[in-house]
Length: 299
Image (cartoon, rainbow, N blue to C red; front, top):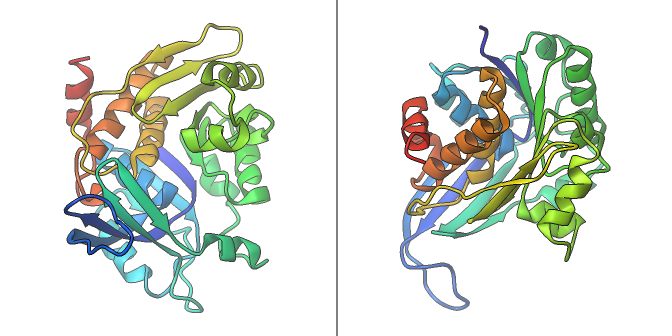
């Protein structure tokens, strides 16, 4: 069975700072315990995790500028991540974010509002030939019509895809094999509504699997016409939550490749995420298949 995965979305250079003694406080000094410049973004992180799990990945999305490109190329050299569709350009230093982390708390910083409001393109259009050869895919919802194009091409070529944080009115949700919805999404689109009610809206508008994650709280998962199930996340010591959701998404993609049932999918993705938050930095220490299988065997 081919394990080719297509990923479309955010590929960044992430500057991460792990603090020693709690999170930043106004007018107080904070000691940096560790800092790195590594691939990030929802798609970049998922690519790293999927390669570690043993999948062959082709990713596309954000244009890669002059400051990010050398790091990205060096990092993925020798890994099963194909960068041939990614655009490397000389007109900009590249999209980067900056994340301050202390255990359960993190704050990302960037210039994404400025980028999205500029009216200028800074990402690729998905290529049909890339999607046609894939066995599973993941699509970030951030690139408007181009994200929808990727979804339509997946539908055309019978490629099941995972998306994230797509509300029940979105085509991305309605056509997805799996939609993973975070607390950030429910707070934005369903403010004040209980998770069980949100799930009713989501599961009735898609034939796929919907998963609502709630940080350290119980996950909900369901399909149309079926009851809603819950599962507790794995209990681990948290070192950094950076990349937890992206790793969960990667676990769902791997589950599609392997044909897991819904319970197996949620358990596997949750184990991937649990391992991710127990270490820092995630790109240098992604979960391996043997680690994930070892953790799921004990639940």
